[in-house]
Amino acid sequence: MSKLYALFGGTFDPIHFGHLRPVEALAQQVGLKKVTLLPNNVPPHRPQPEASARQRVEMLRCAIATRPLFDIDTRELERDTPSWTVATLEALRAERGAEQPLGFIIGQDSLLTLAKWHRWQDLLSLCHLLVCQRPGYATQMETSEMQQWLDAHRAQHAEQLHHAPAGRIWLADTPLFDISATEIRQRRHLGQSCTDLLPDAIIDYIDRAGLYRG
Ligand code: ATP
Picture 1 (cartoon, rainbow, N blue to C red):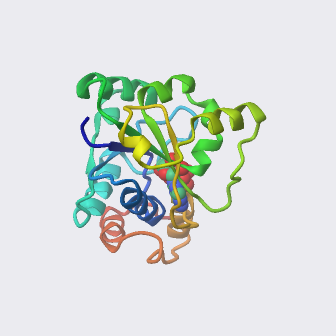
Picture 2 (picture 1 turned 120 degrees about the vertical axis):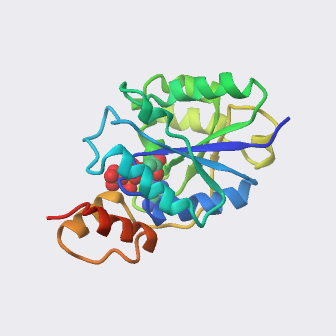
């Protein structure tokens, strides 16, 4: 069986240390050699990003220039339909074959709202869910049905992620970063510093592009 490979979807408006550092820790923990950043096209349940698709990709490029763990897949930006994760995973599964162990990385906040995702019940037939901790969010699911679903699929050992192509949920023990893109955009609009929240190369890009101003 080939190596576990993972995708990390997000709006990335902009990408920040709360994305990068937990995922780097997760990669070490479960033995991920590559993580593909998957910028969303206008997620249906969220307001439009402030940065354009091109700018969000440029910021990802700034982030990965010094981080070889990551690469970028822009396929969701190339469609003008909503970014259904399940559809992207189906396409990847078709490309990579039925045996490839595939992970999809989310934060704890996304796990809590997973039941709102399009065809969420199909996700575990396509991938493992790799969940990073996020401060300020409950560790228990909201309903007993969702908690039972989580308990039934939870992996106890990282090896389980390598020995099956899909079907497990890994609750990773990752460092906590109380950072959101919303806070970064707000701070920028107020003219406040963000140096502790995201890499300098991205701040330079934001300055040059005149993003999140006024
Ligand atoms: P916004 O504030 O604009 O809603 P965000 O900071 O939550 O954005 P997204 O691009 O929406 O970032 O998040 C992409 C993924 O990263 C989601 O699965 C989310 O749960 C996860 N994530 C975002 N910030 C953190 C964080 N600080 N710690 C752990 N996971 C995070």
